[in-house]
Image (cartoon, rainbow, N blue to C red):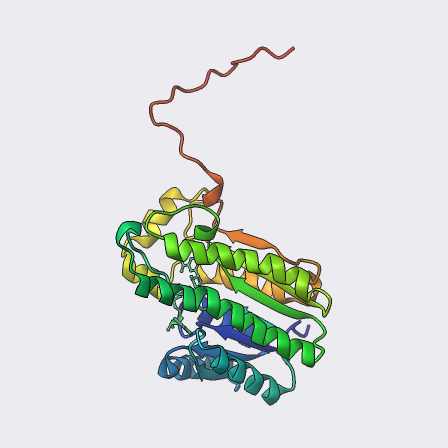
Length: 271
Ligand SMILES: NC(=O)c1ccc[n+]([C@@H]2O[C@H](COP(=O)([O-])OP(=O)(O)OC[C@H]3O[C@@H](n4cnc5c(N)ncnc54)[C@H](O)[C@@H]3O)[C@@H](O)[C@H]2O)c1
């Protein structure tokens, strides 16, 4: 059976490593043409080469672009769309995670986090939407990368979490604004995902997150790539403006006081 995505033109930002890289791999394996965008041009080139070797075809084109630069993003999107004569999917995945105490968080770091995560996502979506509208793309799809930190409060992640909540909201607004073309816009909110970066930050990442996740496993890049492809397929075209949490149920639990007594089996008589 031929893939839904055969000959699709797909852009994935922040894709040299981690979640974005896996999304590129999944689309390339599904016979799409993929633009692999990373701020580091060498990383983009090496990663694209690795994927082309893996799939045995020239499916992945590298672009060294900073998503915080709207002009460069617009140029990149238009160059890639012109190369294949179409643009079907934009996965606005690039984002920087930055931890810091709220009381001492600096305006310089704040501005960069907002420039990449919020402004970068906004203008990446705008560049893709303009290209899809002018090319009359049939099932245009934009997926924004939010986070569970945009759903719940998390210590030391005020600026980052705020941008991720904004990204989630952007999906709601764009669903309404772009539905007419028709382009769907949804957000993915990953929980803790095992990547090169998260393992570097915490060598015990797997055991730590397995212990607190209801289904007893850590999130993987495959979990997020599967969701991105699910949202991008034509059969998902009625899913619009949603924020989908992929965290094994982690955000569904709340802390029970350790000293709380076990509830009696029958606390209320049923009548
Ligand atoms: N890994 C997680 O646990 C997790 C959880 C929730 C949400 N997310 C979100 O998912 C996305 C990907 O996360 P990740 O952990 O795979 O990313 P990562 O930190 O490993 O970075 C992936 C790539 O993005 C590139 N990048 C950074 N800034 C860029 C910019 N301005 N323009 C273009 N490329 C840039 C980096 O060079 C890197 O190669 C991010 O938006 C992140 O906030 C990740």
